Length: 59
Image (spheres, rainbow, N blue to C red):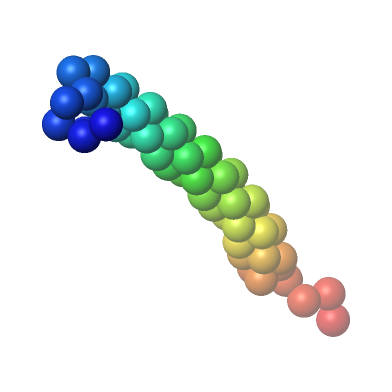
């Protein structure tokens, strides 16, 4: 069958494009959530380091 003879081709391609768009968006959101989590962990380390840098030396 010739692809130009398939009357449902445009609908099928639109559905496929929508599914791929949703998948890419989901992957982007997961990546952003992970990046945010890693950033929070890094900030906690930086805060801990900063608080110990400003402590007076006991001797």
